[in-house]
Length: 164
Image 1 (cartoon, rainbow, N blue to C red):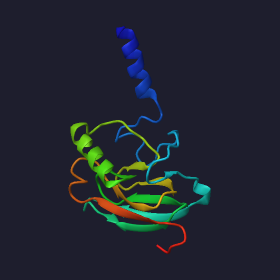
Image 2 (cartoon, rainbow, N blue to C red):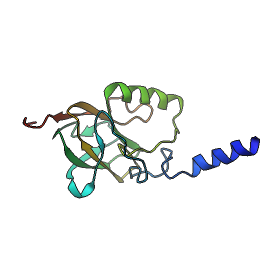
Image 3 (cartoon, one colour):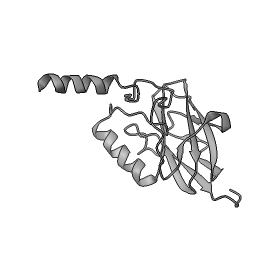
Image 4 (cartoon, one colour):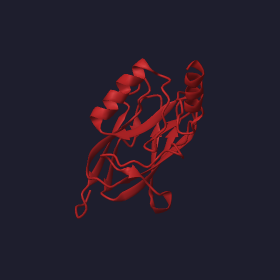
């Protein structure tokens, strides 16, 4: 039984989609399964409009408000101008808050989803996301202390037929 637990733990650590905040920084999860979420689904970079964001040790994203149309695919190029590790995670406010609370308890928690990227100092990361659901969503840095300091932005997805 003990050997099986060790083997399962090793398999989980070796998984390409299981990254800690220190590993795989600068990339979204390339092997993560596409999963429909309330704010959309992983997109195809060939059909994407690029939006550049900057983040830094002032605990802010620039811009901190983004408007897109329902069905639009966005390639976020996220540049970390600071000296600290930062991340961008897209989601609904309640889910991001819950994830931030969990990160306080487990700051080296392993995860890697296509709606997030971890970016080392002076590096860049990317997320390609299809916003196939209208609504108002957020993006945030959930590294302990960063979210609480206000490192949050808003994404407004306008329903088809309306201008953002």
